[in-house]
Amino acid sequence: MTYAKHLLAPLAFALLTFPAMAAEKLSLTEISRYINDLKIAQAEFTQINADGTISTGTIYIRRPGRARFEYNPPSDALVIAGGQQLAIFDAKSNTGPTQYPLRRTPLNLILARNVDLSRADMVVGHSFDGTATTVIAQDPDNPEYGTIALTFTDDPVELRQWVITDDIGDQTTVILSRLEQVASLNNNLFNISRETELRQR
Image 1 (spheres, rainbow, N blue to C red):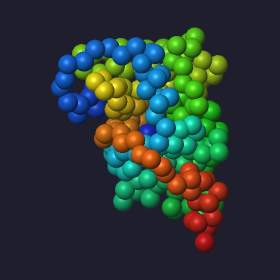
Image 2: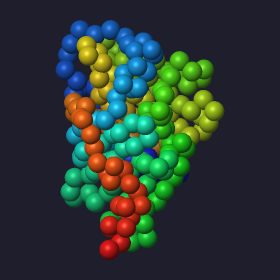
Image 3: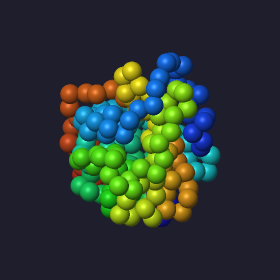
Image 4: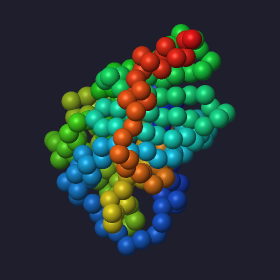
């Protein structure tokens, strides 16, 4: 499966974009609380793909279970997580999106209703480089699905980027601008069936 190429480059490169600040290692409890409190948000992002190409766009998140990646031109890609599915839309195809069960993707680990990073065998890495804390997580019941490496700064706690490693070892990095929590987002942003219908008209 190569969905991560379309979705989400080394971690060190991304951390160069973070502001220098006094920081300390965040605990798994603090990070879990932050993710669970992150209900509705949006941010600009830069994506470094497995083949080294770079794209930009806007991400919309509505936890649990929903996210939308809108890519800026010249890319025509669109990725939607909703209805327990992950759908990848390609403007060059009129056959509908490529879909995967969301639970089979590492992205599900941050879109889940209740994130508990202290769960046995879920976290396989927890490090601090003096600026940011990185947690590498996997589905403890299905580690073959791949991992997601989440990087946070503190004061206040903020998600800065993630690196998804898929089931064949390809890595895709998403670097976020400031993640802005918003009051609401339209349900249609995360409706895969509606998006499919609109594109087939």
